[in-house]
Image (cartoon, rainbow, N blue to C red; front, side, top):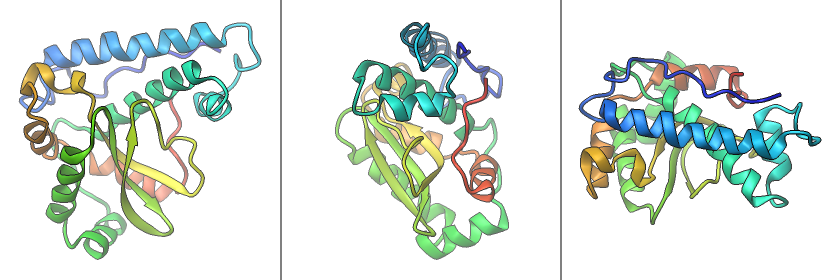
Length: 203
């Protein structure tokens, strides 16, 4: 089963000025597409050919770094597109209650996301996730992912790779983080929380 590049869930101008249409054209149409193409090429004719993307990631972790990087990056990017919205959405009552309990407020959570993202060394991802019944901010480096991690349910992610923000914000990652903090899709996070299991890449 070959994987497809998923469509953006909004117009290419929807995230401006946080993320420009030009950035999305490269990030989605070239970077994400390349990860999908390399994943498909690597699994063609192998035992992985009929697996879900999540199963490919889990099988490749620790055994095939190239396949792991490309399949995990394919998943991360799909999750990232859905973590953003043209207009910031509202959290469910359940998620809002957990945010208030674990971070004090939505603004408090945004501050922590921006702080952890700005302090993250080199490329990677900053996540809002559920672990042990509590909300937690997690970081993964380079192409690593939470997609196959037992006991962790990712709710949202922000891409920290330079290609996610350099055309719009140059080296000012904090400015990018402040901007995308106003485009977070809390409805998507709420759906992930309510389902209780990790989001599956649509194909």
